[in-house]
Image (cartoon, rainbow, N blue to C red; front, side, top):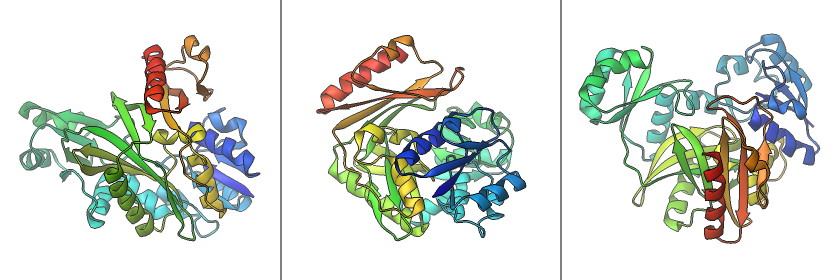
Length: 358
Protein backbone atom coordinates (compact mmCIF):
# COMPACT_ATOMS: atom_id res chain seq x y z
CA UNK A 1 0.00 0.00 0.00
CA UNK A 2 1.31 3.41 -0.97
CA UNK A 3 -0.29 6.62 0.23
CA UNK A 4 0.25 10.07 -1.26
CA UNK A 5 0.32 12.89 1.28
CA UNK A 6 -0.03 16.51 0.19
CA UNK A 7 2.13 18.51 2.56
CA UNK A 8 5.29 17.31 4.27
CA UNK A 9 5.39 19.36 7.46
CA UNK A 10 5.33 17.99 11.00
CA UNK A 11 1.86 16.48 10.60
CA UNK A 12 3.04 14.68 7.49
CA UNK A 13 6.10 13.55 9.42
CA UNK A 14 3.99 12.06 12.21
CA UNK A 15 1.73 10.38 9.66
CA UNK A 16 4.87 8.97 8.07
CA UNK A 17 6.13 7.56 11.36
CA UNK A 18 2.75 5.90 11.99
CA UNK A 19 2.73 4.52 8.43
CA UNK A 20 5.94 2.56 9.03
CA UNK A 21 4.29 0.44 11.70
CA UNK A 22 1.42 -0.31 9.31
CA UNK A 23 3.78 -1.21 6.44
CA UNK A 24 2.45 1.69 4.38
CA UNK A 25 4.79 3.53 2.02
CA UNK A 26 4.45 7.33 1.82
CA UNK A 27 5.10 9.79 -1.01
CA UNK A 28 4.79 13.48 -0.25
CA UNK A 29 4.10 16.54 -2.39
CA UNK A 30 5.62 19.72 -0.96
CA UNK A 31 7.48 22.68 -2.49
CA UNK A 32 9.87 23.08 0.46
CA UNK A 33 13.46 21.80 0.38
CA UNK A 34 14.05 19.13 3.05
CA UNK A 35 10.69 19.44 4.89
CA UNK A 36 10.15 17.51 8.16
CA UNK A 37 8.51 14.51 6.46
CA UNK A 38 11.50 13.96 4.18
CA UNK A 39 12.76 11.44 6.76
CA UNK A 40 9.65 9.34 6.11
CA UNK A 41 9.46 9.00 2.35
CA UNK A 42 10.10 10.43 -1.09
CA UNK A 43 9.35 14.12 -1.61
CA UNK A 44 8.01 15.43 -4.90
CA UNK A 45 9.29 18.98 -4.58
CA UNK A 46 6.71 20.87 -6.58
CA UNK A 47 3.93 23.39 -5.79
CA UNK A 48 0.75 21.96 -4.31
CA UNK A 49 -1.24 22.84 -7.43
CA UNK A 50 1.31 21.53 -9.94
CA UNK A 51 -0.77 19.49 -12.40
CA UNK A 52 2.07 17.19 -13.45
CA UNK A 53 3.10 16.42 -9.86
CA UNK A 54 -0.49 15.76 -8.80
CA UNK A 55 -1.01 13.46 -11.77
CA UNK A 56 2.15 11.55 -10.82
CA UNK A 57 0.95 11.25 -7.22
CA UNK A 58 -2.42 9.96 -8.39
CA UNK A 59 -0.80 7.47 -10.80
CA UNK A 60 1.66 6.03 -8.28
CA UNK A 61 -0.42 5.96 -5.07
CA UNK A 62 -3.39 3.91 -3.91
CA UNK A 63 -4.99 6.76 -1.99
CA UNK A 64 -4.26 10.45 -1.35
CA UNK A 65 -4.68 12.47 1.82
CA UNK A 66 -3.43 15.85 3.01
CA UNK A 67 -1.89 17.29 6.16
CA UNK A 68 -3.27 20.84 6.05
CA UNK A 69 -6.50 22.46 4.89
CA UNK A 70 -5.17 25.11 2.51
CA UNK A 71 -4.59 22.67 -0.34
CA UNK A 72 -6.15 24.17 -3.51
CA UNK A 73 -9.51 22.48 -3.98
CA UNK A 74 -9.38 22.93 -7.75
CA UNK A 75 -6.11 21.01 -7.85
CA UNK A 76 -7.64 18.02 -6.06
CA UNK A 77 -10.74 18.12 -8.22
CA UNK A 78 -8.51 17.48 -11.25
CA UNK A 79 -7.48 14.08 -9.90
CA UNK A 80 -10.38 12.96 -7.69
CA UNK A 81 -11.72 10.68 -10.44
CA UNK A 82 -8.32 9.01 -10.79
CA UNK A 83 -7.59 8.06 -7.17
CA UNK A 84 -9.50 8.05 -3.86
CA UNK A 85 -8.93 11.29 -1.91
CA UNK A 86 -9.68 11.34 1.81
CA UNK A 87 -10.95 13.34 3.60
CA UNK A 88 -13.47 14.15 0.85
CA UNK A 89 -12.76 17.22 -1.26
CA UNK A 90 -16.12 18.76 -0.31
CA UNK A 91 -15.19 18.66 3.38
CA UNK A 92 -11.99 20.51 2.52
CA UNK A 93 -13.93 23.09 0.50
CA UNK A 94 -16.23 23.88 3.41
CA UNK A 95 -13.41 24.03 5.96
CA UNK A 96 -11.45 26.49 3.82
CA UNK A 97 -14.14 29.18 3.96
CA UNK A 98 -15.24 30.34 7.40
CA UNK A 99 -18.63 31.43 6.10
CA UNK A 100 -19.34 28.03 4.54
CA UNK A 101 -18.11 26.42 7.75
CA UNK A 102 -20.52 28.40 9.92
CA UNK A 103 -23.40 27.78 7.56
CA UNK A 104 -22.64 24.07 7.87
CA UNK A 105 -22.71 24.25 11.68
CA UNK A 106 -26.04 26.08 11.55
CA UNK A 107 -27.53 23.57 9.11
CA UNK A 108 -26.55 20.72 11.45
CA UNK A 109 -27.90 22.62 14.48
CA UNK A 110 -24.49 22.77 16.10
CA UNK A 111 -24.55 25.88 18.34
CA UNK A 112 -22.11 28.63 17.40
CA UNK A 113 -21.45 32.30 18.17
CA UNK A 114 -23.23 34.97 16.13
CA UNK A 115 -21.54 35.93 12.87
CA UNK A 116 -21.90 38.29 9.92
CA UNK A 117 -20.39 38.10 6.45
CA UNK A 118 -18.38 41.15 5.36
CA UNK A 119 -17.79 42.19 1.78
CA UNK A 120 -17.36 45.95 2.15
CA UNK A 121 -16.20 48.49 4.74
CA UNK A 122 -19.86 49.34 5.38
CA UNK A 123 -20.55 45.70 6.29
CA UNK A 124 -18.16 46.05 9.23
CA UNK A 125 -20.42 48.75 10.68
CA UNK A 126 -23.47 46.54 10.21
CA UNK A 127 -21.65 43.65 11.89
CA UNK A 128 -20.73 45.79 14.89
CA UNK A 129 -24.36 46.88 15.30
CA UNK A 130 -25.56 43.28 15.01
CA UNK A 131 -22.95 41.51 17.15
CA UNK A 132 -21.82 44.25 19.52
CA UNK A 133 -18.27 44.96 20.62
CA UNK A 134 -15.81 43.47 21.07
CA UNK A 135 -16.02 41.28 17.99
CA UNK A 136 -13.46 39.28 16.03
CA UNK A 137 -12.94 40.06 12.34
CA UNK A 138 -11.27 37.32 10.31
CA UNK A 139 -10.42 36.59 6.72
CA UNK A 140 -12.80 34.00 5.33
CA UNK A 141 -9.88 32.00 3.97
CA UNK A 142 -6.26 31.03 4.77
CA UNK A 143 -5.98 32.20 8.39
CA UNK A 144 -4.30 29.96 10.99
CA UNK A 145 -2.55 30.26 14.38
CA UNK A 146 -4.10 33.69 14.94
CA UNK A 147 -3.08 35.07 11.53
CA UNK A 148 -5.57 36.97 9.38
CA UNK A 149 -7.71 38.26 12.23
CA UNK A 150 -8.11 41.21 14.56
CA UNK A 151 -10.22 41.97 17.62
CA UNK A 152 -12.31 45.13 17.27
CA UNK A 153 -12.86 46.46 20.78
CA UNK A 154 -13.93 50.07 20.22
CA UNK A 155 -15.97 52.05 17.70
CA UNK A 156 -12.89 53.67 16.20
CA UNK A 157 -11.63 50.19 15.30
CA UNK A 158 -14.79 49.52 13.31
CA UNK A 159 -13.78 52.15 10.75
CA UNK A 160 -10.30 50.71 10.23
CA UNK A 161 -11.03 46.97 10.43
CA UNK A 162 -11.71 46.56 6.70
CA UNK A 163 -8.28 47.80 5.66
CA UNK A 164 -6.53 46.27 8.68
CA UNK A 165 -7.38 42.75 7.51
CA UNK A 166 -6.61 43.41 3.88
CA UNK A 167 -9.83 44.65 2.29
CA UNK A 168 -10.99 41.18 1.28
CA UNK A 169 -13.87 38.81 2.02
CA UNK A 170 -14.16 38.71 5.81
CA UNK A 171 -16.37 37.38 8.54
CA UNK A 172 -17.16 38.98 11.88
CA UNK A 173 -17.72 36.73 14.87
CA UNK A 174 -19.37 37.54 18.16
CA UNK A 175 -16.95 37.75 21.07
CA UNK A 176 -17.29 34.80 23.45
CA UNK A 177 -16.36 35.05 27.13
CA UNK A 178 -15.60 31.37 27.41
CA UNK A 179 -14.63 29.30 30.42
CA UNK A 180 -12.25 27.14 28.41
CA UNK A 181 -11.41 26.00 24.89
CA UNK A 182 -11.65 22.34 24.02
CA UNK A 183 -11.34 20.13 20.97
CA UNK A 184 -13.14 16.97 19.98
CA UNK A 185 -11.27 14.58 17.69
CA UNK A 186 -13.06 11.85 15.81
CA UNK A 187 -12.37 9.41 13.01
CA UNK A 188 -14.63 7.69 10.49
CA UNK A 189 -13.91 5.12 7.79
CA UNK A 190 -15.66 4.49 4.50
CA UNK A 191 -17.80 1.77 6.08
CA UNK A 192 -19.26 4.35 8.48
CA UNK A 193 -17.49 3.16 11.64
CA UNK A 194 -16.83 6.07 14.02
CA UNK A 195 -14.51 6.45 16.99
CA UNK A 196 -14.07 9.54 19.14
CA UNK A 197 -11.19 10.46 21.43
CA UNK A 198 -11.71 11.89 24.93
CA UNK A 199 -12.17 15.65 24.96
CA UNK A 200 -9.02 17.76 25.09
CA UNK A 201 -8.67 21.06 26.96
CA UNK A 202 -6.53 23.62 25.14
CA UNK A 203 -4.73 26.81 26.14
CA UNK A 204 -3.81 29.38 23.48
CA UNK A 205 -1.61 32.45 23.65
CA UNK A 206 -1.30 35.01 20.85
CA UNK A 207 -3.48 32.78 18.71
CA UNK A 208 -1.14 29.78 18.96
CA UNK A 209 -1.89 26.56 20.84
CA UNK A 210 0.44 26.25 23.82
CA UNK A 211 -0.82 23.25 25.84
CA UNK A 212 -3.36 20.47 25.58
CA UNK A 213 -4.50 18.10 28.31
CA UNK A 214 -6.78 15.06 28.16
CA UNK A 215 -9.08 13.51 29.05
CA UNK A 216 -11.43 16.28 30.17
CA UNK A 217 -13.58 14.68 32.85
CA UNK A 218 -17.04 16.02 32.00
CA UNK A 219 -19.66 13.53 30.89
CA UNK A 220 -22.18 16.22 29.84
CA UNK A 221 -19.74 18.01 27.56
CA UNK A 222 -18.45 14.68 26.24
CA UNK A 223 -21.95 13.61 25.25
CA UNK A 224 -22.72 16.90 23.51
CA UNK A 225 -19.41 17.06 21.65
CA UNK A 226 -19.70 13.44 20.52
CA UNK A 227 -23.12 14.20 19.07
CA UNK A 228 -21.77 17.20 17.15
CA UNK A 229 -18.86 15.12 15.88
CA UNK A 230 -21.09 12.31 14.67
CA UNK A 231 -23.34 14.80 12.86
CA UNK A 232 -20.37 16.32 11.03
CA UNK A 233 -18.76 13.01 10.11
CA UNK A 234 -21.97 11.49 8.80
CA UNK A 235 -23.20 14.58 6.95
CA UNK A 236 -19.87 15.02 5.15
CA UNK A 237 -19.59 11.27 4.46
CA UNK A 238 -16.20 11.79 6.00
CA UNK A 239 -13.21 9.45 5.89
CA UNK A 240 -10.25 10.20 8.16
CA UNK A 241 -9.61 12.22 11.31
CA UNK A 242 -11.53 15.44 11.96
CA UNK A 243 -10.97 17.95 14.77
CA UNK A 244 -13.73 20.21 16.06
CA UNK A 245 -12.70 23.21 18.16
CA UNK A 246 -15.27 24.39 20.70
CA UNK A 247 -15.79 27.10 23.31
CA UNK A 248 -17.16 26.06 26.71
CA UNK A 249 -19.42 28.56 28.45
CA UNK A 250 -21.02 26.99 31.51
CA UNK A 251 -22.61 23.77 30.28
CA UNK A 252 -22.94 25.23 26.79
CA UNK A 253 -20.73 24.29 23.83
CA UNK A 254 -20.22 26.68 20.90
CA UNK A 255 -18.47 25.56 17.73
CA UNK A 256 -15.47 27.64 16.64
CA UNK A 257 -14.08 25.76 13.62
CA UNK A 258 -13.26 22.32 12.30
CA UNK A 259 -10.10 20.99 10.69
CA UNK A 260 -10.35 18.17 8.12
CA UNK A 261 -7.08 16.56 9.18
CA UNK A 262 -5.01 15.37 12.10
CA UNK A 263 -4.67 18.17 14.63
CA UNK A 264 -2.12 19.77 16.94
CA UNK A 265 -4.39 19.27 19.94
CA UNK A 266 -4.34 15.52 19.28
CA UNK A 267 -0.58 15.06 19.51
CA UNK A 268 -1.00 13.65 23.02
CA UNK A 269 -2.59 10.56 21.46
CA UNK A 270 0.81 9.31 20.26
CA UNK A 271 1.81 8.26 23.77
CA UNK A 272 -1.51 8.77 25.57
CA UNK A 273 -3.97 6.69 23.56
CA UNK A 274 -4.24 3.06 22.55
CA UNK A 275 -4.19 4.24 18.91
CA UNK A 276 -2.83 7.65 17.92
CA UNK A 277 -4.80 10.03 15.74
CA UNK A 278 -2.14 9.55 13.06
CA UNK A 279 -2.49 5.78 12.98
CA UNK A 280 -6.28 5.98 12.99
CA UNK A 281 -6.24 8.49 10.14
CA UNK A 282 -4.14 6.08 8.08
CA UNK A 283 -6.37 3.18 9.07
CA UNK A 284 -9.45 5.10 7.97
CA UNK A 285 -8.16 6.25 4.59
CA UNK A 286 -6.61 2.89 3.68
CA UNK A 287 -9.56 0.76 4.77
CA UNK A 288 -7.95 -0.90 7.79
CA UNK A 289 -10.06 -1.49 10.93
CA UNK A 290 -10.11 1.52 13.26
CA UNK A 291 -8.13 1.23 16.47
CA UNK A 292 -9.24 1.89 20.03
CA UNK A 293 -9.30 5.53 21.14
CA UNK A 294 -9.04 4.59 24.82
CA UNK A 295 -6.78 6.80 26.95
CA UNK A 296 -3.70 5.23 28.55
CA UNK A 297 -3.74 7.60 31.51
CA UNK A 298 -3.79 11.37 31.86
CA UNK A 299 -1.93 12.98 28.98
CA UNK A 300 -0.60 16.44 28.24
CA UNK A 301 1.20 18.21 25.41
CA UNK A 302 3.33 21.37 25.36
CA UNK A 303 4.16 23.01 22.04
CA UNK A 304 7.73 24.20 21.52
CA UNK A 305 7.49 27.56 19.77
CA UNK A 306 10.42 29.46 18.27
CA UNK A 307 13.16 27.40 19.91
CA UNK A 308 13.79 24.14 21.74
CA UNK A 309 15.64 25.05 24.96
CA UNK A 310 18.51 22.75 25.85
CA UNK A 311 16.89 22.19 29.26
CA UNK A 312 13.98 20.47 27.53
CA UNK A 313 16.33 17.88 26.05
CA UNK A 314 17.59 17.06 29.53
CA UNK A 315 14.14 16.26 30.94
CA UNK A 316 13.28 12.71 31.93
CA UNK A 317 9.85 11.14 32.17
CA UNK A 318 8.57 13.05 29.12
CA UNK A 319 8.54 12.47 25.37
CA UNK A 320 10.26 15.05 23.15
CA UNK A 321 9.26 15.32 19.49
CA UNK A 322 11.70 17.45 17.48
CA UNK A 323 10.36 18.13 13.99
CA UNK A 324 13.78 19.06 12.61
CA UNK A 325 12.71 22.53 11.51
CA UNK A 326 14.88 25.65 11.37
CA UNK A 327 14.12 27.86 14.40
CA UNK A 328 12.37 31.18 13.94
CA UNK A 329 10.00 33.24 16.13
CA UNK A 330 6.46 31.89 16.29
CA UNK A 331 7.29 28.63 14.50
CA UNK A 332 6.23 25.26 15.90
CA UNK A 333 9.48 23.33 16.19
CA UNK A 334 8.33 20.36 18.24
CA UNK A 335 6.31 19.30 21.23
CA UNK A 336 6.69 17.53 24.54
CA UNK A 337 4.10 15.02 25.69
CA UNK A 338 3.58 13.53 29.13
CA UNK A 339 1.45 10.69 30.43
CA UNK A 340 0.73 10.24 34.13
CA UNK A 341 -1.47 8.09 36.37
CA UNK A 342 -3.36 11.10 37.75
CA UNK A 343 -4.50 14.43 36.37
CA UNK A 344 -2.66 16.24 39.15
CA UNK A 345 0.65 14.62 38.35
CA UNK A 346 0.15 15.30 34.64
CA UNK A 347 -0.59 18.96 35.29
CA UNK A 348 2.57 19.28 37.39
CA UNK A 349 4.65 17.94 34.51
CA UNK A 350 2.94 20.15 31.93
CA UNK A 351 3.50 23.21 34.14
CA UNK A 352 7.13 22.22 34.61
CA UNK A 353 7.76 21.98 30.89
CA UNK A 354 5.83 25.19 30.23
CA UNK A 355 7.98 27.06 32.76
CA UNK A 356 11.06 26.11 30.75
CA UNK A 357 9.75 27.01 27.31
CA UNK A 358 7.82 30.20 28.13
